[in-house]
Length: 255
Length: 335
Image (spheres, one colour):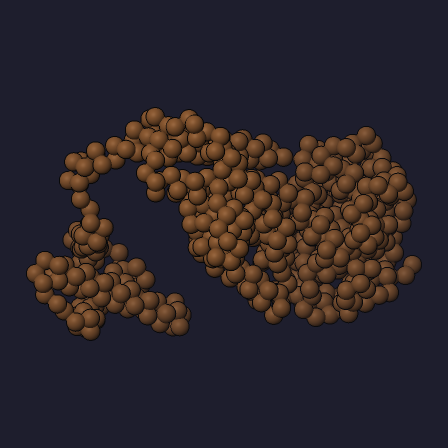
């Protein structure tokens, strides 16, 4: 399998002086479900956001599907972003709009402004959007406003929106951190399915080791902006766990 | 604390004390002049002020020190401290000077009521024959305010995006555009609509059109500020999410920003219309047409019963507008 993401010596220093990423080197192969573990502030979110340049890296190289995203500008950058879906902890949907409209916004990278203004009239796109909603178990929810949906349903709408992009990679930034454990598992199940059936590479930051073991094919541990662990979920024993989370940490089982 | 910061705080403290004591000596010399006909040259006032503040500063008991510099916490009650008494002095002297300047005269207030008898009887006995004429003028005012609001919306809407900190890139051009628009909005808003009305009544002639232009300019400035502050308060999450789909800047604005601001924008706009109706009355006084102009004419002719009629109509309209706009805004909040 070829590398779909290649990160070389990636640094991020925030204007306040915080050194969030200290020379990250990481290659992710096509089809991997890569889990990022680490404490809050270890650099997981910064790393994910550097990958589609929602945050500008300070230095280093990132290749996505063979293309240099750091050098990309304007139209080129948008075309690369189109291949990268993103899912957020807070779902980041437009709350006073319907599920369908929110899902359709996933197609924006493919349309011009004028066409996108009339996108609810585009039968083909609406059809695909409805299919995607159905895929995440939200058939018949297309007219519901987002603010009337539960957290788990909202995250599934967000997944459907990402699917509109036909992404090769999905970046998931703590997608289940604001959900209860049962709902968290159901959302992870959909991501797992996309990984298996659609061969979409997924990089997902998580807090629950149990979910990492269940869905991840690979685990990368971050601590203070550096990679401290890289292996399979099975390899994480008590000792490794403490390496990632610090000496005082105890694993809490969530089922 | 850093040295540079201390220097800045010290400067602020010194400046505050200088201003306070020059103000106090200025006020005292004004009172001396009024009561005892003693004239003190302006330069002397400044010098006395400086001298007092230097003394107070060196003794370390000044207000500036208290406000800007870290002082040892003492358990002294405020009336046992010098700065406490300085504040009492400032308030007292300001009140006395204000009383004299404003020519406050309670005697007149209680004894000359009958002077207002004409207007009072007019209010309680309005001339109903003027109803049709007044209603026509009132309609002019309401429509004038409405058109001013409508014309202001597209300008304010466009400008507000460029006056929102979170949408403008942090580059030289982005910052310049932001600062220019914000400055214009602030300056144009701080010039009262009544001043604009005077300008436009000369420009396009006395009448409702001048009033509309005046309110429009003022509304553009006010709405730009309100709109852009609303944009700065939006949830950045959806904006980021839409950016991540590969959308371009305009698409991000249309799909990430606009849906979040539509209902607050509508609420602000209706509120603005409400304000404009009230302002339109005043603007009419200086040549902006409508009910204000009619009121001015009748008042100058001393036709108090007509004035009474107009006042009742204005009150009714303001009351209704206030109620309607509050109701609509309440509904919008839930959207």
